[in-house]
Image (cartoon, rainbow, N blue to C red; front, top):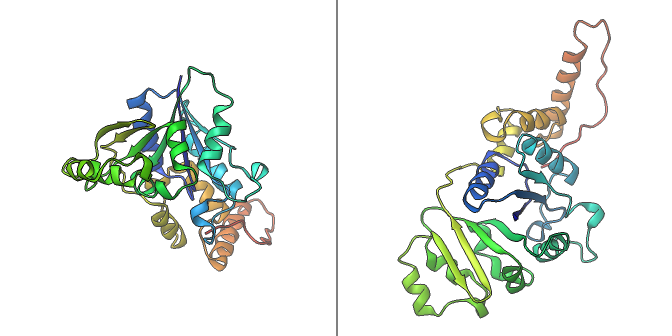
Length: 257
């Protein structure tokens, strides 16, 4: 069975993530795509992120109608490692313990993240544990992919120079690494764009879909505290309108950045 891990912060999950997962599932005949939200991403240790529970809940809503997509608790707070941050190699090894020998494991990643893979924990081991599916974009070449590999796996300079003339498409097969380039997924949506839109009270339907948009609105996510409080008050008064009940909104809303 072909399965894939799709890790990330997912703050929040959006339609671009789903489009990538669908394209990968179709091309590589994936029976399962596990969306793994990181509790503590190593590259965002000093950045505020939305609590894990909210991010997992949004993933559950976003994937509810996708039979092959599953939100995963592999990097939940309860499974927080002793060293604090969640590292992909640890998650991948833990995940593979539950699989059969005949299962084929893929690791789904965007090309921007892949270009930094040599700086990850045990990058060579990660490339050996799973086949990588790298989501490509116009403007990147096979040379960019080759040069991003850890030094022991990196092709000679003359080879990467020649690869620089070719777009980042197809696949690269090396001793100890198999990299598939997934091109043609044109979804220009970013989590930053969504958070900014939510802060301004704009519609998120075309960015995250109705279930996630409704969750963000109800929980007051990505809003400053005063605007989130006003939003909660409006929801409370709306819920009580016509019922003869006096609604007194209070307390702090759950929120994130």
